[in-house]
Length: 192
Length: 155
Image (tube, rainbow over all chains, first blue to last red):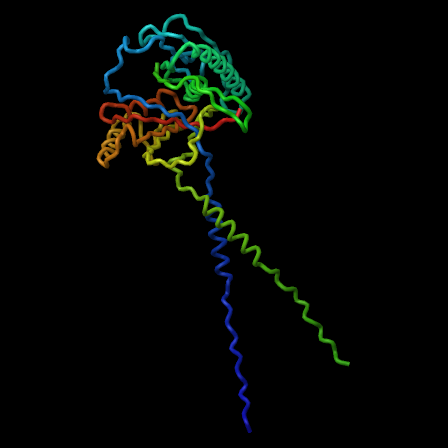
């Protein structure tokens, strides 16, 4: 009798994938929780000589010396009250007595979403737009003046950046297809 | 007549392969967007908006950037942070001097290769934000290039 050996079928063992899928889900949850989208930030660059270098004497600076001043309602106020501008300061300081100016009448509220805050920001924006128009006219007479912004120390940094935006350029064109026209490039800041 | 065996009508498990493929796609997506710069781009600091300032685009230069975050804490005291480490106003000059010494010792030229990036919160007082410029420009620190970051605002 020939024993027919039944060939034992060797079944290939399948790898159990459930643990791998579990790890994959853990990884996914980790990445979702640490996801932190940040928008690219725009910037203004400025180069300043170090404080140790000799200060420019008044005679060396080209006339005129335009200047802009940002003031609040009180010495420690943080909200913008007045924007003043002169086309030429005699000497480096102080700011002369009778400049061209715009007074801001509204005050912002406590929160950024307050209607008072929105109204105040709109008023400031309109005032800075007027400043920009005046600077454009003024620039027509100049080659490359250095403009100084005197900003009260207690004022919010937001106003300084609005002033720099208004003075340094103008955006023309549509949202998708725009150009930035430069008005002033050399801008100095002085805290007052 | 043979009894028809009732076929086992066990429902088959749905094929999970496409779902696992999607999960791998999602993982790859998040892995590409992982961002370890939380100290540098501190989200608690809301930089002021500007319509004129433009972002840098792809930065490919060799400039060393030192990022300072300036914000006010709950008591209204201005807090400066460099690489996550907090500083007070009176410690700024000393820190600037030590950073300057380190960079010069490693061979960098301060007025060409180094940029101080200032991320100031919009409601922080201007004087306090400008303090970084004054500390950076001080006699022993001599930093020359400063950058003020803003949010891009589309009017």
